[in-house]
Length: 361
Image (cartoon, rainbow, N blue to C red; front, side):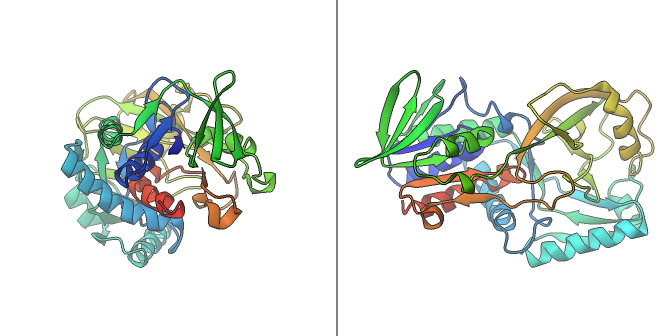
C-alpha cells in the first residue's frame, strides 16, 4: 500500500499513476475535499515550458507534463483550450529578454515558438501595444477542478481511495514499512509514502523519523493577487510581459468563458493571507497599460489571491522543484516533494511518473 499525502493536483496525479500501476493507494487530505489549497488558486494556465533552465526539473516536467496533460484532457473530457500566448516586450531592452526566452524554449524542446515584431503581434491582437513579442502556440488553459475530478475518478476506478479530514502528523519506521499517524492517535502502516503536502511538506518532513533536518528546505510564501476586468474580452490569447523578479509579471489570462483576469503580482508574506487589497490596483493599472494602454479607469476589480510554496526569496534566483527520494536520502519507500509551485499543474502527470519510478513502483 502507498500513502500519498495531499490531494492537490500533484498528489492526485501521483495517486493515479500508482493506482494505475496496480498499487493499493490511499490519498490522505487534511481538508474536506480535493484541491482546496494551492491547486484552488492558480491561473489555470497550461505552460509550454520555455522559461526554465535546460535540464532542470521544471523544464523537463513542464514540457513532458504539458504533452501528457493535453492528451489526458482529450481522453477524459476535461474542458481546456490551446489558445496560445504572447510574451511581449514594451521596449527594445525587453526585446532582448524575450529573445533569450525564445532561445531557452528551443533548447528545452518547446514546440510552436516564433518571434514577432510589433506589427506582426498587433495583427494577431489589435488591442496590443508592444515593441516585439514571442508567440507560443502550445500554451493553453484548463478547468483545474474538472482536471482534479478526473484524476480522482481514475484513482477510485483503479481501486484507490481518498481519505478527507485526515492530516498526517508523524511518519515513523517499522519492520513492516512506514507508520503514519493521523487524528488523535490513529495509525496506519503502509509500504511507501509520498509527501505532496505543499505548504505542509516541510512540516511533515521534519516529523519523519530518520529524515535529516538539514535536508528540509525553508518555505517562502509568495502571494499573488489577481484582479478581474469588467467588459468584453479585449484579447483572444494570453498576454504576458517580460518576466520580473519572483514571477512572470502581471499578465492577462482568460478563463474558458472568455473572462479576463490579470495577475499575479508578487507579494512576499510571512503567513497565509488570501485577501486582495484594492489598493494594489494602482500597480496593476501601471503594469497592464504598458501592453494595453486602453484599459479603462475603473476597469479592474479585486478577484482572488493565491500563494506559492517557494524555496527562494526576494533577490534570489528561482529554485527548482525539489524531489527527494530514496536514492537521495537513503530511506526506502519515501519521497518528499518541496517547492512544487508553477508550473506544478502543467507538470503534474510527468511528476507523477517520476515519483512512481523513484519508488520502484
